[in-house]
Amino acid sequence: MSFKEIIEFEYITISEAKDILEEIAEKRKERSELLFETRRALLHLRKFSKLPADRARELVEELMKLPQVGRRDLAVKLVDIMPSVPDEIRTIYAKERYTVTAEQIQEILDVIDKYR
Image (cartoon, rainbow, N blue to C red; front, side, top):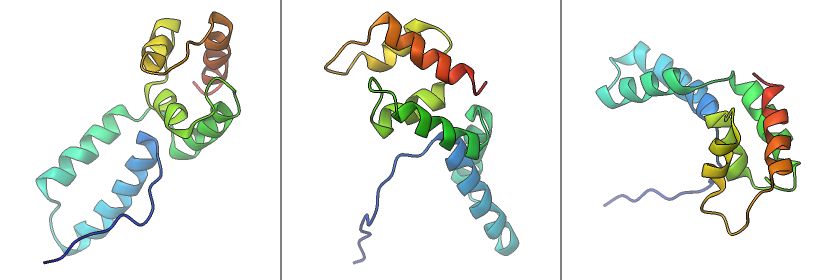
């Protein structure tokens, strides 16, 4: 029996996942046709990625500098959704143990708006 072990784990944006899967798909196309699941995943990533991967990484890094974001998983979620109104940000923070203020929400929106 063979088990796979997770050696490293990192949150990545949808845009970064799209680039990775595009590269994998290109290599696999040379050998054989893509599996149904791979094609569906790639279609989903192409449809929902909102920024090029390099810009998405930049935005994640900039958002992580904000004290109200601070964590990579929150920054990635914000980049994937690219919220445009305060209620979308409140929804992302709904499960957190702290509440963001209106000023903090506006600060997040201002950073995200620079990347639209």
